[in-house]
Image (cartoon, rainbow, N blue to C red; front, top):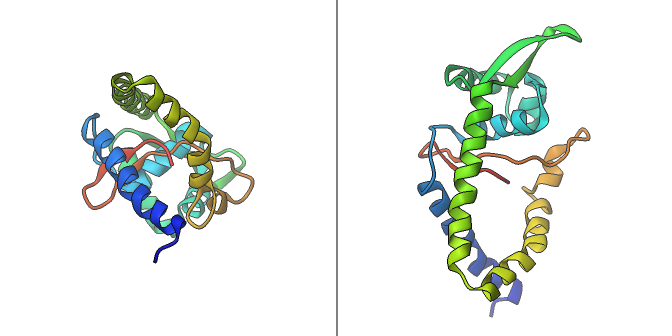
Length: 174
């Protein structure tokens, strides 16, 4: 016999997966890995970051982050510049193209969801709205949530999630 919580997790997982899968398929895509999308979102929402801070945030080694940032640079979404506080360090920042891409993606995804919400009846929309605070707590808490990952006083950010196997964006928030 399974517990009610195990049963809830079993029913919730495929719904969440299918929702982000549909949002991904119905909105513009750019080939990014999960880490590339996450770094772009961090730069959009949190401003310029040192490579070492990005590597720590993503839990990757510095050479891996160098590759991630290199890909974002080749796509015109990010750029590097010397850190004025320490000439040995490099700051990574989002470009105007990166800001446009991110804004366009968020707009397209919210429009897709808006259209779906309009098609629902008021009772279902109210149920979804009532569930948002609990879903936010589910996202932020526990292993793999935002809280354990942030460290060093950082605040939760919107994040672009990417299916790393297909290299497609799947979500704009974590």
